[in-house]
Structure formats: C-alpha cells, structure tokens
Length: 93
Image (cartoon, rainbow, N blue to C red; front, top):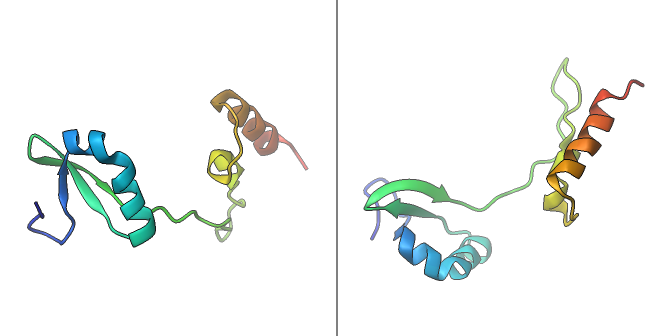
C-alpha cells in the first residue's frame, strides 16, 4: 500500500516485525524509505541515516559529536558515554 502524499510504501507494524532485516536492507542499499503504520494510521517514517560531521556554529562552541560513539562501532554503555562526555564538556582548557 502507498500513501497519498508520496511514493513511500506503507508497511503494517506486524509486517515490520517479521521482515525488519529485509526492510532495513532496502533502506540502506537501495536508498528507499517506508512508513510504518499501526491499525492503518501512519506513525513513523524510516529513511537512510547520514551521519553528521563536526560542525562549528558561528559565535558558539564546537559541537562535540563524540557522544555518538556507538555509531562509530565503539561498544560502550550509556553510563560510559555519559562519563566521557562529562569529562570532555566540563574540562577547562
């Protein structure tokens, strides 16, 4: 089923549970997106994620994106990530 606004297919939540790996592969490899519906009501849209690069805002501090270590294949717990972030963000230079 397709939605009225675009060409993204609408996938029921039960189908997503059964075929999640296939759907994620189609998003990753084919650059496709889809909408998840629950009881025929659209609730979420799945699109390909492009990681952001480090950005410097004018007149602001440099954004510390090291908080997103899990996306860089680093295995850390949430507590370890928070501790690392606190050390780098509160350290005075």
